[in-house]
Image (cartoon, rainbow, N blue to C red; front, side, top):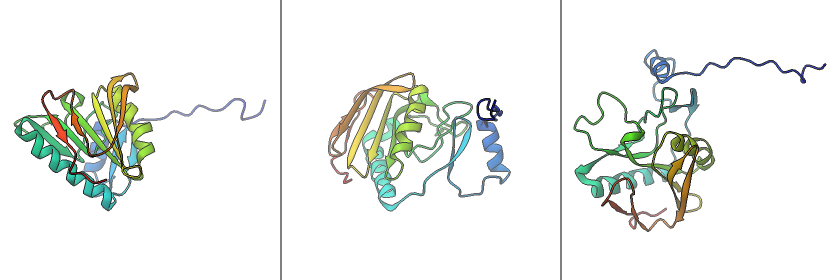
Length: 191
């Protein structure tokens, strides 16, 4: 019997969010290094290009202006999905809280809309992060595909997937299912 016929199963040790935070506090993760915790694994995040940064700023402004004081806009901050996953989406529209989530990171129950901007990260955002968001019940996710100049909108999570997908031009007005009465006018955005 050859070695490949009977492979050795090695134990894997997944990190918790608590371990991840302790590593950052202890300096194991260098300050300024962009990482996120996905299913217990530390993932290096891609550098932010100028088109990506510009669209995140534009989207942040649109969300702030149109959502007013009814919601909180979080830009590239942690979202606590579980004990082993804490990604940092580009933008998240959250339920308003007077403390601005000072004592705990937001969770999926707080999310009205999650947005990822993809220039070099489309496969990662759609194949790794999107199923993670669905599994944890994030009700609506938008991915702005900078290469194709398209907005992809996923809704109605079920298991590791979403049951509704729209691909739209960026100049549309979008109504959010989780935020009744809020329609976001995206006509000012140029992808």
